[in-house]
Amino acid sequence: MTSPASASPLGNRLPSAEDRQIANQLRQILAEHKAGEAHLQVFDPATKKPVDIILTLAMSDLFIQLLHYIGSGDAVTLLPIQQMLTTQQAADLLDVSRPYLIKLIEKGDIAHSMVGRHRRVKAEDVLAYKSARDKSRAEALDELISDSKDLY
Image (tube, rainbow, N blue to C red; front, side, top):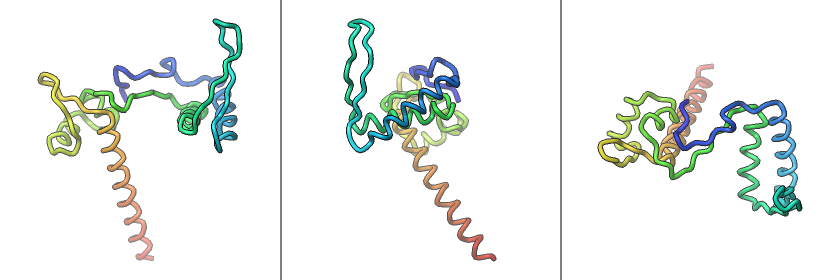
């Protein structure tokens, strides 16, 4: 998958063994404090003093999810939800061809806007379509499994 131009990859590489170990350790620490706010203390090199950081439950959840992927050795890309994507970037995100994405846009399945003569789509709209598509696929698969049980 091609990363959107504004996406920020983790050093443009897969996490190292050390990255994975640190991510898993930090994820475990955050998960233990999931019932409430997590209090972290980091060293500020500028002031040479420790700084207390309080993570809300929402921030802890986000970090835990991010650290899970890094700890599993997966490459991670951050994408702002309001980011406008080119049709190629959106197609890559959905793992479909660009012409197929254009058909989805023309059918009205994915909202878009025009910038000059180029179509742009919000990452939020692409992810909403992907979520709905995945849900529909899961329901169809469940139905097939249910139907196959009736054959035995």
